[in-house]
Image (cartoon, rainbow, N blue to C red; front, top):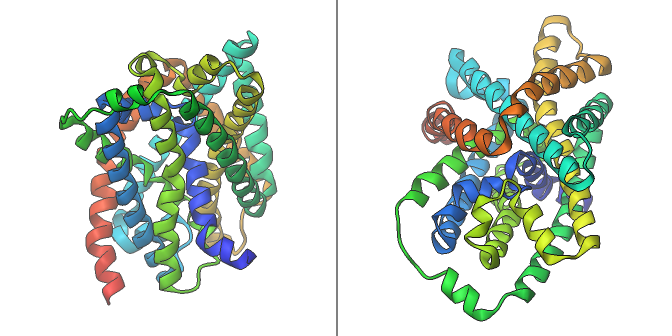
Length: 358
């Protein structure tokens, strides 16, 4: 049973962990790319993104499994040859923006909930991420998988409560179909920059043995990663369009529910997602550094080196968090998305499929 979970569910759970803290755990990312186009258009856009992410995940795992490429440096040498470093340039830029978004969101929550200066949230997150990366891949993988289960439990409870408070008239009125084309571009952008996390978390797919397992894990993993986001979007129905103006839409929804215990659970889980997203992304970068250092010296970096990498990355991204979560998501994510179209998506569907077919 454990072997089954590691093959078919673990990659999706780790991808979700990496994706969620960078924006959709707060709901801001979902509002920016989906909900602002209307409830009906937003839902179609989320379903389209889910399909695209699942297909890309499946192809990537199949290629990774066939060539035993379990870090992004090795993987992109297969796709881009000498140009593999172009993904790393984009990856580092996105990585810093993601960490900055988490720092801004953590600080905002700490301030709104407890009146404590925002910098305290960043310091707590820094200490937790550095500690987790110090203990290495096995601990990162276990914690991310466990937290994904806990996160699902809290989010489903939240969704049930919200849906129970809605009236049928609200649902039919808010989901009235008014077609517009903006959601097409937004859903493509959303998928493009989120799939950037897939090569980063290839370390979670080491248990996969066959191509059938790889494809199945990828298709299931895309659904696992996106399902909580779909629930969040649907839950915004009762507060639409007011929810569009909120920096932390899900937090706003919890305040309106007036359920202190559930809200406390959400805050605990959300803060945990910031930590796991940071740790998961940094672990992918560490895997790449370990592989490079092993080629040069025959041994991987030690734990103190891993912790130092995590600390430096978080300190650099902390400077960006002053721009605020809304601006970071709207400008940073949307702009970087198009880079991944040329560096990752097009090579995957051309060179990647050709290598698999051979």
